Length: 436
Image (cartoon, rainbow, N blue to C red; front, top):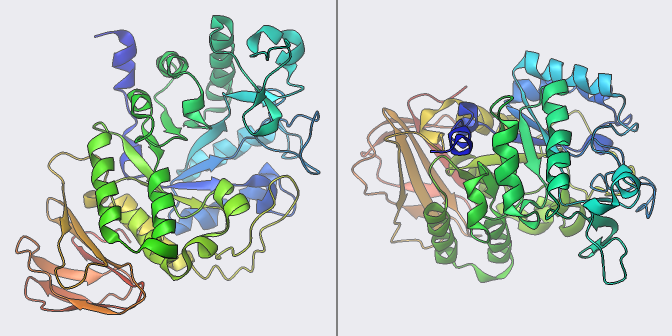
């Protein structure tokens, strides 16, 4: 076995039960700085957040600037920090404080493209793709960014060097890789082993494994984009739960061992361009959130979901989250976050663990499943319909005294005869360690 493959097997163990909280630094506080965000860390820790994903912190290109402040994703220098957020020393202190509180920190890495006035456009124009006229090639559908050329081995080494900077100097724990499948696979296969000579890292790729299965040779976790799209279509029109069950079976078949999907109801792109989770999913939003935290995978929260945030945040301009200090969904997410992190049954990779999807003959709008590891069992019941439902579960393998996560209702299985769910309702029954 090659050294490269040896390195790829050094997966970080903490990822199997982690959760991710995406930080939109610009919109998080009035100041929009690293130092202002420091004050939020104790609250997020108490809520149960494990991994903080910071959207790109690099400087933004001024050429072809979008809006008044530009896109995070139009980088002008891979080894500097956006002065809007503070200084490199401020970021180093933020990472240090995060680590002291037990958080992991991952950076959003935009390898596919840069802004038009990135330092490489003058220092190394050969790093870029060119159009038929010999000019820099704009990225598809986005005129404020230009494509890099990964057929140039010097670019490959330069990009790896830039990523190494943030690991060696700032001790980050991994990367969320923007448009990962738009970058040639050979780059990631070279970059990961090389960078993990420094330390094992967590790799989250923005692609769907069903669309780009080869990229799972490198990445630990990938987006469940198809699930997101099909659940939105389900809520708005189709209402065929078998389509959702078939998709989940496909995901299970496509993911290699020790890898998983990222499940979410919103993120920075969805919120700004396609609507809040409530615009997209309405009354189904919270049931889908419960699913995201209990199905095998990694759950994602976006800035402000604990409020909940009910507005689309502007992407290229200042548009601060309207914090009320009430955090109406904080307790809801706290229960799910702690359960997912601490309960062995919800690890996405554990030997001898079991997941079983249950058949509910009396109601074809119910998704019911349980997960088991040793004496720990988590039974999840989701009503994906606008009608109340009552049904039986006949599976004799589910045995023990269970406590419902949100209400603390106690039941004994298999003696309990009838379950009831409200319209778009959910229940999570836990036998063993609850996690809180």
